[in-house]
Image 1 (tube, rainbow, N blue to C red):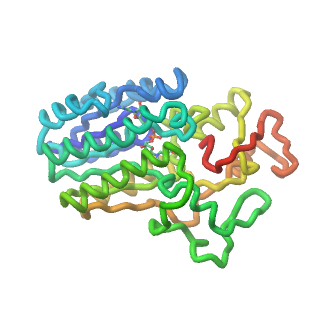
Image 2 (spheres, rainbow, N blue to C red; image 1 turned 90 degrees about the vertical axis):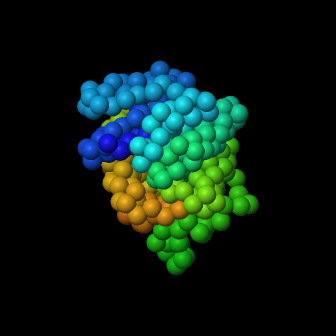
Length: 320
Ligand SMILES: NC(=O)c1ccc[n+]([C@@H]2O[C@H](COP(=O)([O-])OP(=O)(O)OC[C@H]3O[C@@H](n4cnc5c(N)ncnc54)[C@H](O)[C@@H]3O)[C@@H](O)[C@H]2O)c1
């Protein structure tokens, strides 16, 4: 039976991918050390998700390994060898703000961890398809340099601009502010592309915007839609960081992201990078998410959510 090795298998995307590819008849080998709990506290632990996964997929095999542990990762890949036909790499430190607190941890998890996985794949399973969940933050705050027009609930790209219908992967990555998280993910993204182009491996980067779904362990510093709903249900205050809450994000369901990736392993091209949904249909501004939920009857300018706090921020990306 061919093996799908999934890192971050207890997280939002990893657990969704595990369920999907197990349903396709693959053996799932998961790697996750619950580091999300270390990043964001007990409320963000992904252990409950792991327990759910084990109940749902009896054949699921789990390894509590840190992806930075090159030796352990090497041993794992050696054990399964060429039976590994698919690697889905989702383990990461995923927050801008957390990255600034501990840059070395952020970089080693996101960049070094990805390199350890690529190298183990090259040595022991070179024919495997390697899919990396990258991020649109590799473009830094470049999108803020586009001509943005302020509307009632959102910032929109000028409709006459070439990118009004969606921002392509050709958007430059230089001469802008990335955040340390953006830089560590970009390093990983380039390594994944390079292993494809240089070694001819079947690697791809999926540069997502905001991902969401029922199995997100939402915390203030990551998983804003899940966290917004948590605050709504518990009555806890929700803080908006900058831009009047009009910053626009695409919000892709974890199942839809997994579906978008399912055809790629059948026709792999080396070193691909793709923004899976850079069309115009899904993006929502933060205040629109709030209003969509039937939570705020008034216009956001009047502001109005008794428990919604606004905070100024120098960067559009904070608090994602
Ligand atoms: N959720 C989003 O909005 C979003 C948007 C764009 C890109 N991404 C990317 O998608 C990927 C998955 O995101 P997610 O929302 O599922 O995150 P998540 O935090 O829910 O899942 C990641 C999992 O990886 C584990 N992990 C972290 N560091 C580890 C390490 N050193 N060793 C082993 N396991 C480790 C965590 O414990 C967690 O269970 C990440 O690479 C993230 O940067 C996410």
